Length: 480
Ligand code: NDP
Image 1 (cartoon, rainbow, N blue to C red):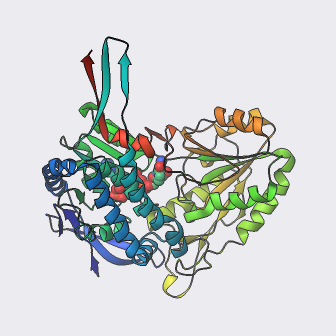
Image 2: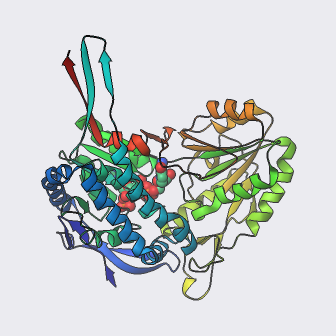
Image 3: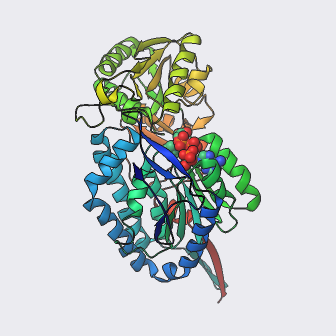
């Protein structure tokens, strides 16, 4: 049985309380190891270590910090296959996806922010002959980071890389459901020359470790990615403490398919935007809206391609979908499929658990599921399911498409399929979403602002936005 450990003040150590939590492999449904069931005492040690390490880390300067983070990126790259295997084992995602997306992106996150900090500049405002103002952006000190299970190392590093590059020290909590690659990262820090206390990783439950990070007075900024309900709880605790908060939350993303689209590309990419990572990406399209004149043709072609997807062993190169992340999540997704049926939806394909054989017989697999016949206000089309389940709805014209697209409390990502340039601009502007893809999905330039509107979040990550979040701006006004 593997035992994972916290990284606090440069030391790998169990929780102070000596308690452990089980961690599972989704593809087998079996326990593979244990992680520390930490609490506020462990968080306290980590916060003290981070605050102690801060002055020297900040004093290292941009180039020194950049070098250290580039070494960490290289250390992950040198151990790529180890990280890939761990991510797939811990999360249930196909090995091929972890190798193509998750781990390369974690490396890219470090490289991107290690170099972005070298180019991070501030502004000056000249008031004719009166005065000159310049903006001094300083790191905050010790900051908190809390991340989810769907893209474990990818999203964990998306937070800690800009925080560290900007000169902060970090107390981070990965999801207790998928702690393995964050642990593997913690074993590389010393070798990569990250000074002790600069990065602290505390494992454990959200309501214990996450809540202690949120409430700690010596962590004046918290960056969180996860569900909207958890985000609301974090905001409730942090707001009266006047903490700086970045909240990246849930979504119910629309895909708008107009009749003039490149049909084959739209179908093929929509299969991918629906079911990559078993539909467990906050950016997956879950409500597919199709212009009525091509609705039947699109539905038939889409369902045919979805039926051809292979649900199988994450280790097999030809598996398109692996397992969903946990028994609890499996049950939630299956309950939503039952709800869709109760609400009058027709299940066109999937709709059930998949039972594989041998070691995988108890794995948490679900067939990719397509549902039609539901209106925009039912729970299936309003609530985030976050699994391999999508709905199809027809629309009559552009206004109708926009009304359907904007008809949820969420506003994270959206996709438009059209060849009409004017329409592209009109619809992109009118969509209530932080991210719009046109004739594509999941193309990511790390310089762009990333985040959602409405209940999908507050603030933006990525590029300069992340570096601004992890620094405080001070205006210095000098009389001329
Ligand atoms: P959760 O909100 O359940 O958990 C996210 C993290 O918060 C976990 O580390 C969790 O710990 C921790 N946590 C739980 N309760 C608390 C608390 N009271 N105080 C502080 N921290 C807490 O989300 P999931 O892990 O289930 O992730 C899925 C959600 O994340 C979906 O809604 C998805 O849309 C969203 N998401 C959003 C993205 C975006 O960029 N907008 C990107 C990816 C996902 P523990 O694991 O122990 O519960």
